[in-house]
Length: 156
Image 1 (tube, rainbow, N blue to C red):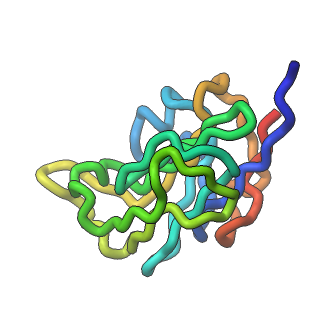
Image 2: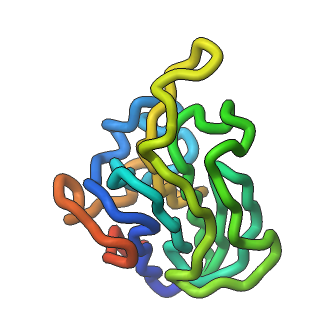
């Protein structure tokens, strides 16, 4: 039985970029999975769940929601794990059921330093369709701007 298509919504406002343009080879080469990324707007932002489902993992800088046979990873910035949670406020609970649009993490991309302990940091937010074939996500939103909750892409 083929799962129904799932609409993946923007977890935050900003400019949508192709996964290939993410400044990290693991994401850019879709090693984690295909998707798109957002260059987030500056200022305090509440990041929301892009799909309805179960929160299977939540950390200050990233979370995964599993719903309708698909898992979506939202990773707040590149190398932001090195901040040890500083600047992030987790609002979701691991194991909780969430609706698309439910609040997950609060952060301020403009407060992320450009480097930390000799590593470059970026505020780019990859939104990854986990366990999906490389190149299987396309989005008409790439190159444009989105508001929180706008459609990023639909699973096939």
